[in-house]
Amino acid sequence: MPTGVQSYALSAKYYDQAYAAKKDLADLPFYLELAKRIGGPVLELACGTGRVLLPIAREGIAIHGVDNSEPMLNVLRAKLESEAKDVAEMVSVFEGDMRSFRSNQEFPLVIIPFRPLQHMYTIEDQRAALETAAFHLEDDGVLAFNVFFPLFDRLYSGIGEEMLELEWTDPSDSSKIAQRHFRKESLDKVNQNFSAAFIFRTWQGGKLIAEETEPLKMSYYTYPQLRALFLLTGLEIVEEYGSFAKAPLDNDAQEMIFVLKKAR
Image (cartoon, one colour):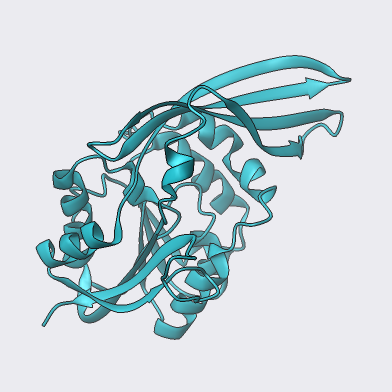
């Protein structure tokens, strides 16, 4: 019987459709290039529905995916059934929490794409997640992850306001239009996180036929805080970028992207 956490059930339902409509999502080429350069096997922590995992497997690179969300993993397993046999054989899937997962294998590359670390809300959890990644690195292996660069004017504004983020045509019924809205509910400046909601609405013939809501909570990081976490977890920076085009991590950055190794 599956033992995964019943979290992100609604997001899992819409995840692939929604992010296929997000035209500015630029992380995949970065992680794909890294996997091709370093080689496998790769470990992806918080792999979700396989948005990054599957393209890596399609390059013939073995990859292990870990996630604690049963609904997300169910979507991934269904997708694997429709993949070519040689691709599916590249993938191993595990239910597990990124704070506590342990296997008996080390990897030349560990990745945490698209902000799972921002679902770690305490120093203890953040440290535990990075220690999991470090535990699974080969001696010369590298860890890559990204979080958003905090733009405080945006973080501190717009509480209670609803914003249309994404819109797409239902792939199973072209007469239906789906939307994802975002509403920030509160901000905790001390603990550096915010609570929000995703609202999914489906329209047909101009009429609203479904509305579903899922809570969201995300932490945010400052650069010195991340540097301190790296010291705590025995990691050091190999590369750092402010965008997936490898722009400098400076005051114009939109992302904080790190490639790390075990500290000597």
